[in-house]
Length: 98
Image 1 (cartoon, rainbow, N blue to C red):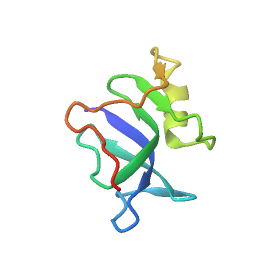
Image 2: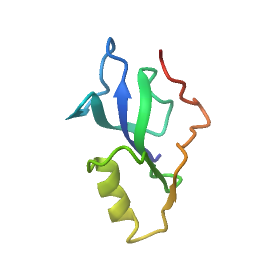
Image 3: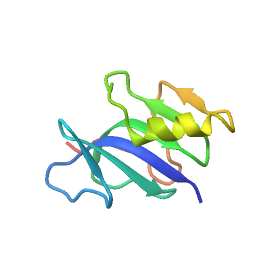
Image 4: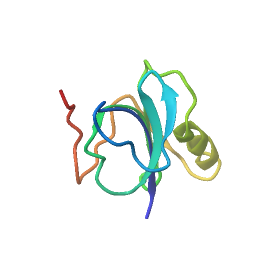
């Protein structure tokens, strides 16, 4: 099973995912197993899907994250597809909470 590395903003009245790192400005860096997205994500800023070897980083997000670190490690052994469009999870497409 692959892991997904995500940097996102989270709805302000909900719990943060386990082992989450706060990056400031309401941004959280966390790792989840290859499963549904947490229901409380409002906007994904960066995501790396290890299983599919796909990486997305929003142009407005400039900080370094665990996703960046994993991409640089994995690029040494396999090609990683980088895209401008957010990644879609077949099980659960993200919709912003308003």
